[in-house]
Amino acid sequence: KDVNKALQIAWHNYQHIGNRYSGIYYNSNEDLNSLFSKFDFMGKEIFSVLSSSDQLFHLYNSGAKVVDTFDINKLTFYYYYLRKWFIEYKNAYYPIINIKTIIETVSRVSPRDEQEKRAIYFWTYFFNNSSIDDLYDFFIEKVDNKTNLINNLKIIKNKLRKNNFNFYNIDISDVFNLNKQYDYIYLSNISDYIDVYKFETFRDNLFNLLKKDGKIICSNFGYNVFRPNEFGIFSKKFNYEILDDYIGYVYKIKKERD
Image (cartoon, rainbow, N blue to C red; front, top):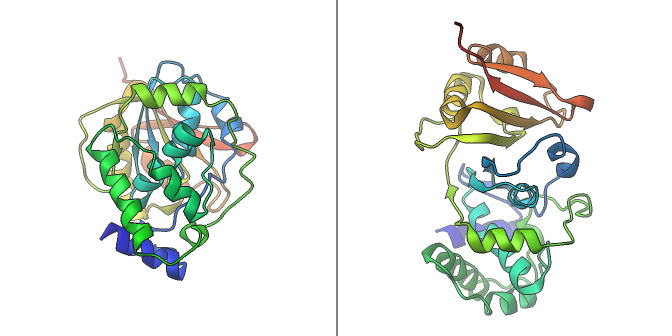
């Protein structure tokens, strides 16, 4: 099913097929270097949107101890492994999207667990059933990747060897319980897409996932600027702070009264 959905996107350049499948961002359109430079991630446990995987790799490059990921789009799981393999076997931060190059790279992979075997099966089945030459139409957009390029991949490679890849295919505004807590939660601009009637569930999920002194980082693309409805609902449990240059905003859990 996952392959068939991916093929529909690659063949027809559909951006969305239902609410669990959509095109992938080849790379993040955020300036992650500027945004992440405002925080100390050294030794921290982080829950981050997966998306293009840039966020995950930059967090590891910034010293994060653990980065668990989530995304409503199931295909981000497979794209993560494609990027991982290009880092490990090609020493390339961004993948070459020519099919022949990808097939050659995938053929070199020695899977470390069942998840990675699943990703190999996905891409192998995808290639065997497609007649395309590259993955260009698999992506929502391709922006200048030099903004977030990481040239020295030593830290990332070391983290990928030591850490398991924990991915949750969830809508973070639905009811769920991971029974885990984190020092940071990175949402990118997910708040721009949350329906107002789901803000309370969204807020409560984040509250349950965050350690007492943790922070939730949201980037701001200016699509909806800052949403008073969201801030109003979140204010029952969080304080918020606008970052310099309006690059984003941060939530912190309100201190309990004495």
